[in-house]
Image (cartoon, rainbow over all chains, first blue to last red):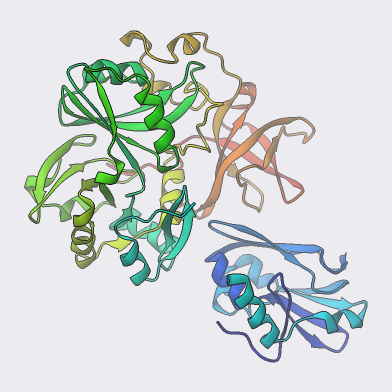
Length: 129
Length: 354
């Protein structure tokens, strides 16, 4: 399982990286592996606003459907359009080219609630027991 | 309740399969890629452990009469060594299960049933047992491996290969007794091999060495859906009759009395099964509601849906009110809170070239 140390994670298996007021969001290696081959991605519109925990998108594999939840509240400022046309990018590179959206964060304090790689690894371990 | 394992469970683990709970069994859902496994079956050959399927043996001098009574197709037409797709219906004419009847001798019928229904089916058929027609649940006495694909039959020695579709042979294969039927659940040519559990690994490894790709339940589902082969709990269930499910061809009303016949004679059709192509993005999945073109009137529900690896597009099946079931009729499917454009299409989605 690849869990880069410089990212933050959620219990819903999203990852987050911060760049000033903007965060980039994707799904974790665990999530893409569980889903299997991803065949469909639906992303929100630019400018849409989400509260923390809102479903902002959908990722589907041949067998299953998974909502993707906003790790923090914010406004969508950028979408990764290539993953809509080629969803398999998420399987190949979930932390790189397979990112999903960028949000302008409305409450930076919510970022403190996210898990470190170590905490997320521990969470996954507990979940599987 | 602990989950059951097939005699091939260890091999699946060794091959790195992802295991899921399916109908109380620990089954491989995929080895490495559902899509690659799917293509292997369409283009070359793939194999499935389907040992979880149930087998019922009906035997005795009146075996045929019993099978004739509990199934809707006509077994009196069958020669020994042939198979028939059929169904167990209840008195309401709706499905207890869909089945394959293998006529071994005039006094011995081996019925292959769904894993999820095996106990229910056994109780159902057992209720009609007499001293002259016995019913045994022999599910534990068989493994079952399906070898499917255009190249599958080339791997079976000529003497052990049933000549035609829906026939079978009882044979010795690599020194092991087995029954090989020219049947399957993928829309391709191929065989299903029934044998003793202790021989399962030998058969599996034989085909593995020949380059047959191990395939899981994921590919089994995409393959059967492309070919529009029904799955209990989806296209058929105890709320659905054969007229509604597009299976009138397995109902022989003139064969004499059988369970469900009286109800079927009323021709009650409250819904029709349709094939669905999405015309907008999104995949229709089981449980998605179907609306008329205006989006205002709810007219049905999706029962199966996936991305078709062969057609590279979203396919689904669903039930709609009969007046909306015409080919080319446009309608909407509610997917992720958005009513998306779809159209009724001809079934099956995939038909192999002969």
